[in-house]
Length: 320
Image (cartoon, rainbow, N blue to C red; front, side, top):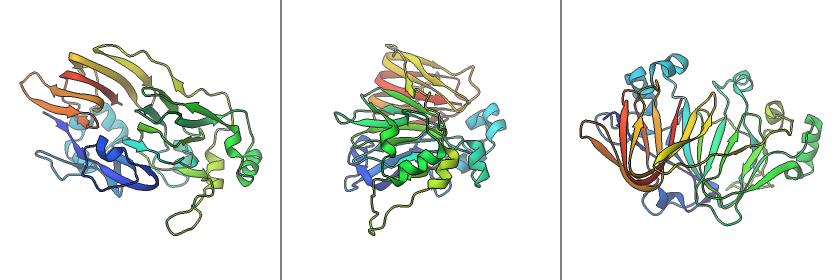
């Protein structure tokens, strides 16, 4: 089967929590793990194939070797050997910084290949956990600078209390922050460019105030307030329900209660499957299968046209 698993990259952070290590079945001993990068071709943070014939290859090396067989011809024509998505889990023990991501045009002006659009799928989070997303009212660049200088930028950002299964889409330019107690799956463009707007006067491990990117952020922010980030969808029992379809990725929630056919015959793309709860197997029509359980992430090559998911589990399915 052309299905790949990767070794997760655990990122220990000032604000990181304690859920990822157990959720990802990792060895105990790691603390304050804020992120687990599941699928990444970001230079310096590339995930590596965990098992099988291609064990030890980075995602970029695998893409260079297999090309359209891995990602699909349409995707290869569009992105070449650059894998277009970054998939990660995030666990916030403290509030993350207020930040923004640029669009492709702004990112390229500053030497990056692409900007960053992203979506969040909420996992089991602490009671009262919240997200900050988007502006309550239109502001100007001068307003923004004054709000940052006066430590009051949070006053103009919307607050959303979250529950498991909630989804949010953040286009480039949307001011946002993940709040304390949030545990989520993040799907985004293959970019790690982030401009930090405000960080609650937090200091790093050496006692220094963390760097802000006030002017870079000012160039990237969408100052209009007319945006609703909430994604409404209806889960299907033993079926797949579309969550979002945008120019950067398409994502569905697949609820498996027994046996579910995953038909990719009309998709000229790889598929990423993330198991957010339960367990089961993913098999093809030739008697081959791979086990998957809560916390696991699989990369399905574009050459796999039909698969069968069996068990009782929830899968987040993403493709280009």
